[in-house]
Structure formats: C-alpha cells, structure tokens
Image (cartoon, rainbow, N blue to C red; front, top):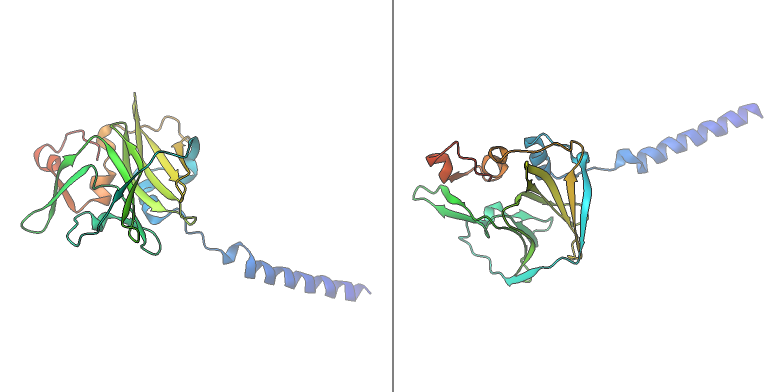
Length: 220
C-alpha cells in the first residue's frame, strides 16, 4: 500500500507539471506595454507600474470628420496602426506643420498650442477626435493595447512643470481614463526636457528652433 501511494503521488505530480507548463504562465506571452510606450517610458526614465488612474471621464465628447487617404500625405508615415491596419492614431496633422524640402527631407516651422489625438477609420473614411487639449497638454506617443484600447502617453502642465500622464480610451469611445505618474509624486519635467517628439518619434523631421535657436525651451 505505501508503494502504491507513492506511485499515485508521483503520477499526480507529473500531471501537475505537464498541466502547468502546457497551460500556465510560461505558455503566455506578455506583449504589453507596446514597444512605442516602452521607448517613451525609457526616454523619461519612468516605470509603467508607476502610473495609477486619477480620473475617469464617461462618454467623452467627440467630433467626427470625413477622411480620405492621400498618397502624398506627409503624416502617413507617423501614424500608429492597429493590428490589422484598419485604424490608425494620428498625433500630428492637427497641430504640426510639415513640409518637404527640395532634397526630400521633412521640415517643420513648429506646432500650434492646441493638440488633437485623431482615430482614423480607413474602412469608413472617417476621422474621430478622441482627445483635444490646449497649451497644458502634450500628446507624445500612442499605441493600441491587447484589448483594442487606445493608450496615449504625454504630459500635463501644472504650476511647477510637466507631469507624465497616460490616457486610456475604450474602443467604443464610452470612456477615457487619465493615469498620472504617482510612484514619484515630485516627477516634474521642465519644458526644455519635453523632447521625445523631436528626439525620438519625429527624429527625421528638422524643427525650426533646432536651426535658429537650439537652446529655446519649446516642448515638442
């Protein structure tokens, strides 16, 4: 009897390990945060786990425009596409002036104070305004998470500087959550340090202040 009991226990142990390795955590792939968000976090030396939900806005106001894709659209290369490329997040065309020089390089004279996050739905030929903000907000990076939610990374200005923020939007547009960086409550960046757009995401674009006034405190 004792021998049979040990054999049974050994069999159960084998079954446990086979089940664990077949169906457990080791078989799952953690692909979030997206590489874009990881780059943004690394640029400002932030941790994804340091953000906590601070506000939730139910049924946010949105505006829908007609949209027609153009082959010579300078902003297309900077769109953030979803998994099947039926949708794209546009962070730039509303506020940023882009032009192509004779040598083919891109140049910008700067941006407007107001910024918009647009969701382009190619199959419906529609563009939906998902976020809009004036001077206090800077939208720097975006991605679609595994549940299809839009995640936008950026900063909000207060009386001491710019504080890191993540905005999370539901796929059907019913809510927006604002997540503030609370791990380090004093994490504030001055304007001259808000450089992710120019240094990383739009690094191929030459901005006017880089040529005319490199030391100018212009958050881009």
